[in-house]
View 1: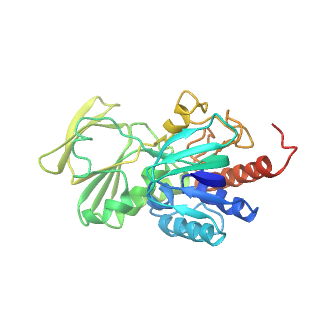
View 2: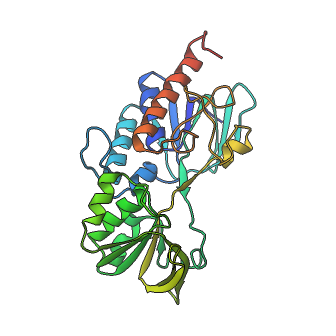
View 3: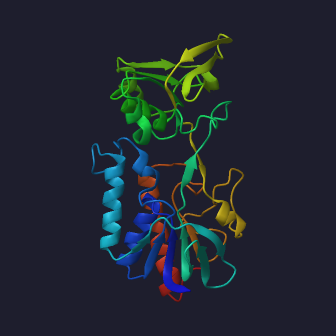
Length: 310
């Protein structure tokens, strides 16, 4: 079993920020990530609200964070999945597909995953015209007609990105107004090849081998119609990756988000959480970084200071 002072699960913005501050504080730190470092920040076509960068690609920002983290001395294990946690004792045990680790403290920064819209045909055509990542799959539909489902920042940002690739972009949102930032909404409404359909629900995704149409329902007029499209990009929010924490005794709220206090402490002593997996109400790169920093400094106090507030 490998021994560390601090283990961080997840190499997204929160986990990488935590790693930087933990290493700079002198803690022997490892980050375990089931995919590649960067998290969902890497999927963002462009980031325009992170201080210091007026505009930067999500993948570029995530890469800068990962490089910075490694340069501070943090060990990052990518493509390694955590399979179980034992948090009952003073030493925290993390089991993975590779080995088992033991540490004085643990930070859970497992982030979230894309939420399904839950309509007929969505699962059937996933990877065959249904996508959850504009950056990943947008280039496959150059000059085509694509549909974006959602009304938040991620949906509008994805639509803006796709407007530079696809021939026509249609945004369907079930409510009468977007939830996205006003600046983003103005940008998307100014694009000639973007059509916005408010009060519109996607009822079904259809196709043969690939997606070729959707069934739309206008919930204001009560009308149903068919629309030919080549791809559907689902951008309806995210759900927390908290099952491992919950199964190991960490308290979560009614939506599955890990409960934290202002110091990022969870219900288990010596275990902290940061980023989109927590019940913090704001899910942004900036808040994830701030939470990661707080969690790392609190973990340092817990490990190194004898009068830590328990």
